[in-house]
Image (cartoon, rainbow, N blue to C red; front, side, top):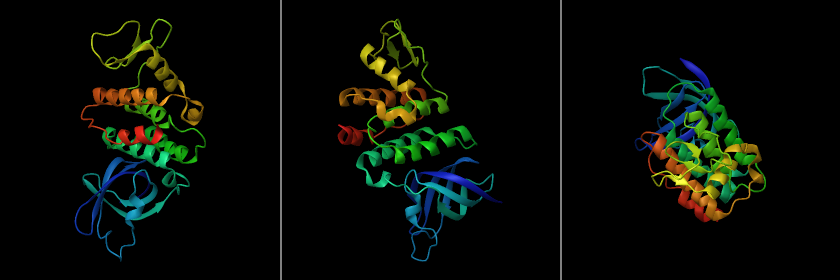
Length: 241
């Protein structure tokens, strides 16, 4: 059956000499894999450039509920990025976000709230002007809400230590090493409280940003089963320092 859907490209891999399999997070069906035959030939009406990571698409698809690989009838760019591909900071942040999503999202069901958050975040990254050095941190923390692993917002004068395992702020240092000290915990609380559209107001030193990013990745690894190692954050450390 044909369906019109919106989609966010997360990953593509070569399937044969002329075909690819693309993972796309859709508004109607969640995360789905699409087999695109003949895309690597000159005669193909669908071009490989449409499936770069985080590309926002309008698609007409053939959807079969019990089929693992779906098919695409038509595909068009829904939102042409204006600055993201040409700005080294934005493209590096997009690379990290894409890897984070690819490792985090397993849903094959509709989650329109998550979809809208991701769609709007990609556009926000493209449009944001000024300081974007903390965009990936704010995005990652807000993503935890939609994944069901949001840290508790219980920071106070008596709870200034963030416990990564428990996902909450507490008064004392835990007996393990998965925690943030009071200075970094205070900054994490600021990030948790900052809307994505206000990210440009955040002024955080490169060393603290690096520590918080390491902490956030550890948080995802601890709270999401099967979360694989992230590599793109190493590029971010270099580009944003």
